[in-house]
Image (tube, rainbow, N blue to C red; front, side):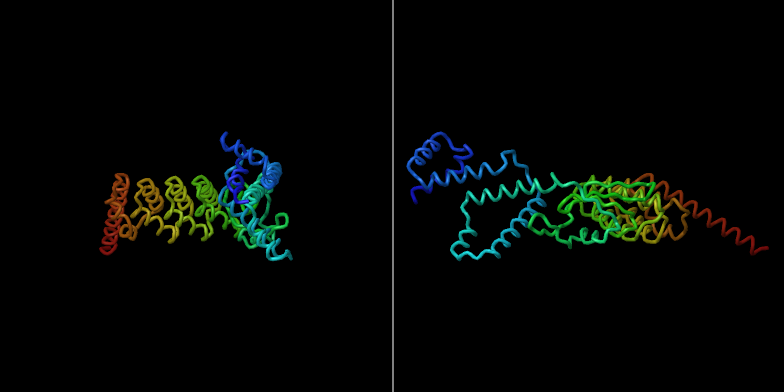
Length: 336
């Protein structure tokens, strides 16, 4: 058996025609005299017939995680039911390399067949009682005989209907899911927040913040949870287009102490002049007062943007002129 070691290692390469001519000839000559190697070759050829003969797709990290979980659960269930002697159990835990490769290929093929290629998106609404469990990845999903814990893998697409105020979100757990509901629904806000702050694709983050902006324009109000998400997005986002859209969300809302503080921080400390100009316009879109002069206008007079400096000087001159008029009016009233 020891002299077969090299030839056994070459059997899988021989099946897939990966051997050079010399190694192939040596393997074929050995097969003529070795019954054990011929038997193993027959098993490999049967296994090759089972595995689909088509180009393999590169799985994502999420898909590999799902397949590993399914394989692990399957193996644990089989071992729990097994009553074979310890020797047979050890053999099961240490299958031959050929069977290891076969199992991996088979489960990878099954994962693609049973996953996104054959299952249409599941549609859920905010009225379903199991929605929160699905979003929070706390409910097991049954696939064949295996139970897999879902998780929020990624948001793919968002739509907002201004006529109804409904948000439609396409995202992934184990299968594709389409969520539709009003932004007042906590589940919808949860996925919107995830799309803005956690998604790796700038396009998805941009669509998410555009959806939030449409809600803000239509309703003239926004849940504090989403305002907080917009503030975090402005702080951590690297894509300037996404940040600019986030700033437009704040401009669409009535001025509040929270929003004003966010805008002042951008005006005073942000390195992007376009964002500083937008923040300045949002702050000065309403009537300014002496408190604003001390809060940010004096600092804005030193901004690197010519436009901000010019507008800040204009507003300060108006405040000074208004202050003089009020002082003059007060003197006249006292004299009378």
